[in-house]
Structure formats: structure tokens, C-alpha cells
Image (cartoon, rainbow, N blue to C red; front, side):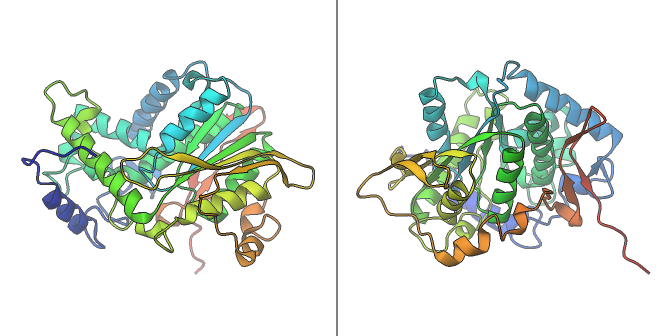
Length: 367
């Protein structure tokens, strides 16, 4: 990996981010400084005001306009693995192997909506008014991205539900670290007639941490160029302190690999599973395991694995606890928790009309 200039104190920035992101800090997960707690923009938790809905409409229209000719073949690619592991390159290879192109797919990643919210804030000046709690003034916009986390998740879910209702080809880019949610999402796709390919990109914790750090530093340096674009000027994506640690039970492989494989094996609409491994910070991800072709009994008809690859652990206990027949996630409804106890209501059709995905506030306690 390339060296970085000495004039940027990355260690100092990292310490500041850890301090601000600690429990009770202005960038913590439950910070009261997040946009959903801005009373001008949101009402009753995660219910956007009329003013904020107009901003969301503009962002979503721009998002859809970027890919006006997405195909409606009911195909889905689910990406899993720690941040910075190299999922984008694995995604690109699979799409090329399909004889397809980026224009045929709707990429759904909350980070893209974070960028759009931050760009909007930079243009209208709210980046310095509403998104600069004390102590964060010296940070780049992307280093404050946790402030728009819930709001970006709202936008991503709305666009995801809309795309699924229309049968668009989609790429769901995340970690797949929450097993019940993973099974629930696969059930929704199955009910909508989607064929699914799952790709997981994984590596030892020190390696994925180093890759995420390198991405943050590289993007920060790009933001300092005189000719940097508006998006580049947002700075580097800083992974929240402790986030990657939560994805590992041991240092060799994240929990994402095991969950991705169990989900792939348990769902009949998953037509292929690929696992990439990255063993050095500067190395490209390498395909080490590939399954395809589901038989009627749910077993794979074609299997390939690199001999030296570390196998994905698959314990009987984990399979029993999280199989579709026993998991709460296999129920007909698909719910996702949001901030303040709100529950996500999936986008659907009613009387021939599309109903937007939205958060439902928790019921008032009985007196």
C-alpha cells in the first residue's frame, strides 16, 4: 500500500473520531445530534416533515435517474462482508460473467444515500449549521456520516422496496451480519419471484481493518486535491469505532461468511454462492469457494473450492437456530427496527397503487 503524506495527522484524526464516537459522544450510535432528532426535519421520531420529504423526493429522483434503464428480470445480488473488504470488485466480476452491465442493475447501498444527504447539506449550508455538533467542526462531512445514518437507511429501504415491487434487478450491498434480517430479506425476495446470487468477501480482522483504514486515508487525500469533485470533497469514509470488531468472534473470519453460507443453503431461490478471501491488506480478493445449481432437495449440484481455503464454520446449533423453519425471520411479515422503537413497514401495493415504505411509531403504552 502507498505511503501517505506527513502533513495529515491521521492518528490524531483517528483518536478524535474514537472520542466523538464513544457512548454519549456527538457521533455515537444513539446521538441526539442525528438528523432524525432535528425537529424541523423530522416529526415523532422517523417521520420526515413536509420540508424534509421534498428533499428526500429530490434525492430519490436523482438516484433513479442515474440508472433509467435497469432491467426487470427479478434478479438480485446480495453482497456480504466487512466494510472495505473488496465487495465492489467481486460484484463487478459477477455482473461481467453474467454478460450484463452496471446499467442493468439498481445498486442499493446506504452509503450512497449518506453521500447525497451530505452533498445536499454542503450546498445549502446546513453541514455547518445542523451537522456540526460541538467537537466535530474539524471533521470532513463523511467523518460526520453517523449523523445521517438513520435517514440514509430510510431512503435506501424506500428505494429497495420500490425496486422489488417493480421486479428490478438489484444489488443489495451490506455486511449481512444480522442473521434474522438476512433470512427475512431472502424470504421477501423469494415471494417476489427473485433469483438470488450471494457473494461474501472476507478476511482476517487485522486485514479488513487495515483495508478500511487505507480507504479512509486515500479518500481523505483525494478530498484535498485542488480539482476534487464535490463528492470527493466529502472526504474519507471512516468506519465507526468498534464496528469491525463486532463482526468477528475470532480474528480469522467474520461472522458474515457463516451467515451468508447458511442463508444461501437454506433458501431455494439462491442460485449461486461465492466466497472471496483477502489475506493481505494490499491484495485483491481471491475466489476460494463457489456453489451453483440447486437440486430439488436443496443441495448444490456444482461445487468448487480452492484447496488451501479456510472452510466456513457451519455448526449444527447455528443451523438449527436460524433455519427458515425455526427462525422468526421466516414469518410472512418483514419488519426492521429503526431508531426510537419504530418498525419498518415494507413498501407494498394496495388497490393497485404503490404504498411507500415507512416507519410505524410504537403504540402508546396503556394507562
